[in-house]
Length: 280
Image 1: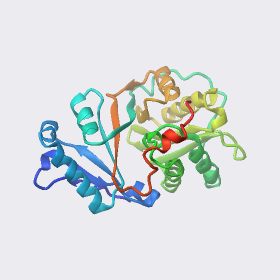
Image 2: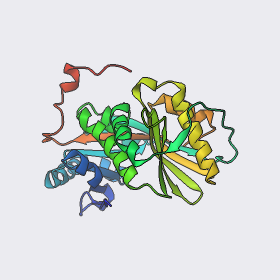
Image 3: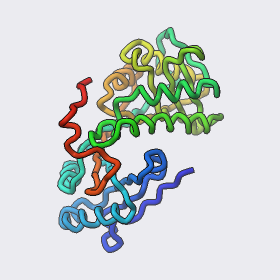
């Protein structure tokens, strides 16, 4: 199990916040990436140059090429401070909260779910590697798309490795044609949806709605009372499905990335302007 060890970005100024290398992502990508937990905004604002120097020194020492940070959208000071210190906005996330699993009405569906088997794993991994357009690594124009896709494949590989009473992967479709999947972790009467997707050709179809509806039926039968997840606010398809099941949303979080001056594994700064990504 990977452990994330956060330490002060500056031992002389612990009020500036903490940083850590993210071991899971680092293992997947083959180079270190980090995360910054913000501290006292006014303290950082009063020492912006020194803070930026401390961040760059930490990144150089740990060979980190990218550092992420998340702050509430409703915190304009931190949103501005991060951008003043070289962070770029890449995503906005929402916590999805469903507190009425046992009483919500679930309409009839046409795509039943079943528990995944080891024989399904390779097909589900391939689906995961090709199905996603959202998420902070996909939204970062300097991050290699192949590595962002690989992260989701490895996510499902880990999900299959952890399957048991507290961790279940469900799939939609017969073994010869899996149309979608969803992974959940369980803790008492709570569940947490970690990841879900349908194949590219079926995105926007009833399969996505059925995937969530059938999941609600499954966790209802298991006695789950509350379900939680985190999604990209840009993924309006899943936002609309969540609303149809009477879900509520937590405060949105703005996600930023900082790129180290020396980042040989990232794409050049102007690469996105030379070959613009299609608007979807």
